[in-house]
Image (tube, rainbow over all chains, first blue to last red; front, side, top):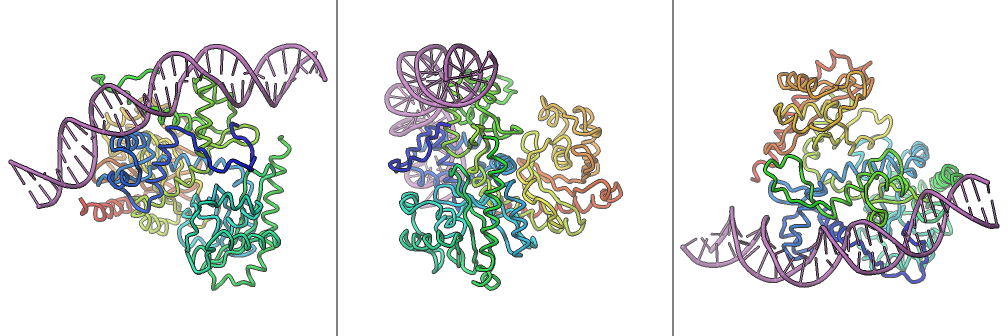
Length: 269
Length: 269
DNA sequence: GTGGAAAGTTCCATTATTTGGAACCAAATT
DNA sequence: AATTTGGTTCCAAATAATGGAACTTTCCAC
């Protein structure tokens, strides 16, 4: 409740003043988001901390179980994160409300359905419903992907107006995942204008080659949370026609989820 | 604040001195492990912090995304935990090595297979393989359950000797989940003695009525990590005979996982 | 509505914790 | 044996956390 509401005008550079915690979390991110386990020296070169300081910080994270070391002295994210997260997931009301709608959408389309929320410039996937559980289940949940090249992300961004989108994405590098990935904000904004008109977003192999999706935005009534639902599948199966055909279903699912949120949470006010 | 370092001769009670981080994590646990969202005052009465202090601590956790507040001012675990955890899970080598064996075991038995690691007095479930994905998938992963009343937990404990088990469980309350739940360490230890002889553990409705399982221990070569695999199902389907029949399969799976860990990680030494 | 209590937030001098340079230790390399 | 590299410990100085109290807002009873 410290938080002041969106008074978007100024407020450009975020101040991030969480003192000790902020530093430790930045370090945790550094280690957890790395592609592979890192040795002390690797971390030392990436974080610009003096050795003594870094060493103590790592020890604290270790002692709390947020990090672990393998026998080669490489640092890895710890399991305590898992158990904390499972609580976060289990108790997430939005996810619970959305779930039946995701299932329905999955049954109607036969393809994989995702629910994701926008956090800064990234989409965090909150849930996933697949038809046949061919391979890994959990994989995608909790995963963070860039907003500018995912259906859910672009749908969520489309709720904001252009200046807000620009402000939010300022400083984000547009990594060219595929040939179709937007290269800059300009391209993204024209795409988003179309998304606003239609009410749904397409991702035609922008994030991953061979993967397409159609997504619709969800916003909470207070406007604090932006999210999206999507139907995703391999390009050979999920043609442009299919995407078009599913678009209304995806919009309807998004609308139904919003409605349920309002009903469930609204009256309590 | 009391602040003595561990220079006491005995050094029995673990000292948990991670300074600022420790305090904040304790608070995060308090909120995340609660059954339901808590208001500021609820938390205030549970943590014995002064109001000003607590307020700032919560603000910091909020700002880092580790907590969130709903519009009623109630605190909930934040989604940032999810994204951190997904990395922790995806990069967990033990889980990756075990996975094919879990699948195999699932196919052979037709029931749900769990992989869990012992953390203190609790089992944290690292993975789960179900036959038909009837209901929720993710649910169990990351979940923490007491070691004394779960198959995986008892199997893992059976690797320790009695004094170690007693020391570890000292101060743990034996919550009577069902009529079959062990009431005290004594009962648990006789059970564990049998588990050691057999090489596998049973859980016959000790944690949850109507749920039975058979589990085998896994220990890493360095002995630092204790874990277990289990096959679980509803009592009406999973009879005592079935459990007996599956026991060797579960042991074999555990052995295979250990073997793979040694092969994969051993040589690097 | 009005008064009053409870809930939530901010302030700031005091106190505790973190910082970081440097010394130290241990293992691998020359 | 000498040197480099990787990791750990120490401690005075710098910084951040603390907590009592004052302050503001929200909620409730009347």
